[in-house]
Length: 184
Image (cartoon, rainbow, N blue to C red):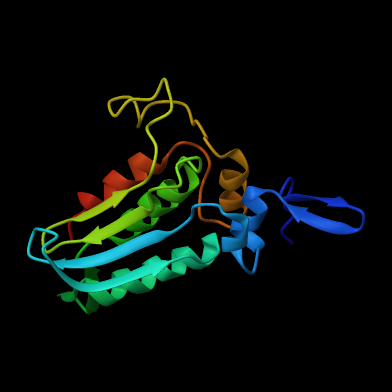
């Protein structure tokens, strides 16, 4: 059973979502005027000159995660290697890293910035994910992995934690680095 605390309030027998509640549960998030778009694109070569595939998603946050997974699957390669009697499928990029980066981009974005979406761009040689907003002080790129967890959007992080998308312990960067160095 999933219990969500602080996703909204009841007044005059009418439930009113707060922003986090709207982002996770509203049928039509756009009527709340909360920026939550993820703009996805697959580009030819290493520049943004030629778009091969695109998708803009305005869904509830959990559905956004699925939209990213489907877009990733559609626009990246999978190969296989045989080790002993086992065939192992290898994604061009470790999806667990992409998943963690997208969850962090959504959970920690600055929702006060409504002029920019989260972007998920796939190039021939890299993936770039951006999220509106700067790191919250005292965080820096250097201290990001070793710092105590800091949450810009506590309720969103709590809900992601309860749904299994986020561990909520500040371990994401370390877990992202590990699959990037794994060898088969």
